[in-house]
Length: 359
Ligand code: 13P
Ligand code: SF4
Image 1: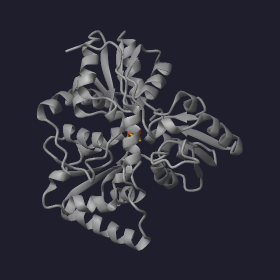
Image 2: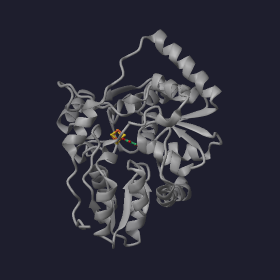
Image 3: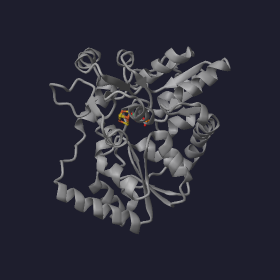
Image 4: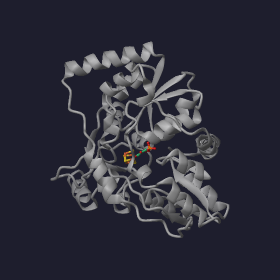
């Protein structure tokens, strides 16, 4: 097997095309949506299942999770909630790595997803075999991977991190004199490197949603709304992060929308987050940060097409299926056991530092 000393080229064009090719659900009438909401709610109850949804999913799925005793959150807290909840069936509305994470942490639970084909461009950018060769070529480095990766990549890592804890974990490793392999998000990696000064050897993946935000157009929008604070997810390019008043995980951005006194906000992340932002700050105004789709057709502009695959209808199909094999998440037990080690490190670190981290 050939070792690779530099990260291999990411198939960006192919991955972007996959995002553009996702068939997005058609909008629903209000009465149809209400009927589906009621049916989904009954199905969750009769199946004794708990819905865990990400902030980027459809607003009605988020509301359903909240009203049915489930949970809506960022990827770290989704994992934590699923792990702590006693339900034996969890339905994860999000993308595949979130379902896999839930399965790794809860091997005894049935983990269902409304759409097993919901990918993530970061996960796609980092095939486990190429990644393992890259790590093998750098045995002196500690391997830190973002949660947006496959179970097999997590199994090869020493640490898993989410955006809410990445900088703290890397700063901790840097203080111990460790050099790091970072994968797969180059933009989050750049951001973490800038604020920690750590030595990161970086994979070159990117998020198809966040990479599209445009700094020049954002500056123009900022001059139109000088009263607005700019909230940016760190998967965005450095020139967008430079313009931010607040950079952080989805949870951190929602908290900023609630905490800051500004009457309005320009938000550089997936617009699914507006449901929660409007809920916590009902009198404030939210604007989408401008992106490449302003005058073009663009499936992944400010909204993740794979997150959008999760709908009330797909949730109902999943819960009503006699054969759940098309919806159930499985992870090879040997891979799961290994991935659990790096995931547990993150969870334990997070528990130990919880009170010190402004998330
Ligand atoms: P969070 O961990 O901040 O929720 O981000 C997950 C994600 O996929 C962002 O694109
Ligand atoms: Fe992945 Fe980007 Fe979608 Fe998040 S928004 S799940 S990083 S493709």
